[in-house]
Length: 486
Image (cartoon, rainbow, N blue to C red):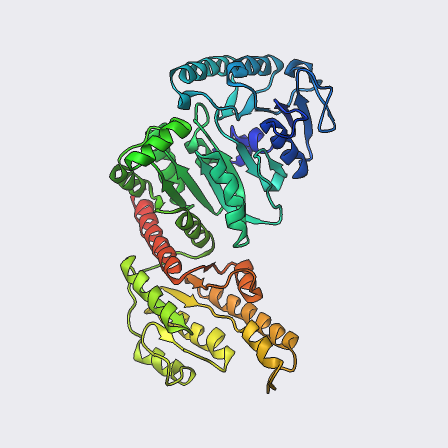
């Protein structure tokens, strides 16, 4: 596949017209929720609700069946009882619809009868050449096309460079809110459900040529076609990172996956080796999945595993250094040359070891220019971990009671710090070395928000920043090996 437009997923992610089969005027109906989200997100295409009795659904003209729709929709969004899904898909085929998202559940994941119904569904769709996502999924989200078929609201202002493919539907939608805490979003997201037709590998292949997707995140309960997935993943990972959270390597996880999407899981160690062979970075938690995606989508690769840790608080710096060592990174001592360059900027109460600990500073230029610049110039370091404790709130309270020799108002201070952070970000990016921050302050702190919006990841703990740097190093190694082998 050379371009995104010739993908079998193009009409699913960029439809100009959609038939919503199963929506009604009952707010408790899942089809109604999906239709309402589609409309409220600002979808510009034609929408055709299909309902056997209602003449209007959510203010739109409704049709008793697909065959009555005056045009041939690009896509069918199907949310009807399991027993009639195959019949509905037959009508779609007769109408000329060739792409579908089947939300309805109760198929393979529910037992023998569900398996029979899924086999019947496949016979019908193959007869008419219909390609579909699902069943037992909640669809897709494509912010660039204002297209959201899920039952959760998506904030269109969220920046999206993470392409997500998940066997769990709710996992996709609940991550809208998790990512929003960091000002992040999806470039495109897929809930693939049972993968009866289009599977996770097809979605990865599609996201590989999506210009807005910098990194691909995967939630896996079991792979339908591991050989196909391996072939595609190995090729994609040479130029675009993949991060996977596998749930199913334990007895309890396997049970959950089987009843959830009918997934066939395998032993944890088997998937561990499989991911390594495919060039996929494995995450152990939901937080790690998106920490790693954030870092891999914004930071350059590492040449080696040597990191400098810089902090103005001793405890978080020690935690970052300890976590870095445990995660396979080295935290070497500073060279004599580097020590000499920053000696005047580090008070006697601080430390010129690694971590470099200021403990306190009266000169923000040292903290956000001199010291980072010196560490970035040092060829003995391949990445920088920095703990941030912006002083804006502290400074505001001080200005109410004291005089500043530099700033007369809080606004003057904030303007100065904002300019300094912009210069700091340009400095970091000019050296092409990974730089990951951490802070217990989140986006409610303006300076943290500014850094994140300028593509400096600020993770909620020093340990998480160190683990993310380790993931970046592991991917750098795997990618180099896979490119050399090809």
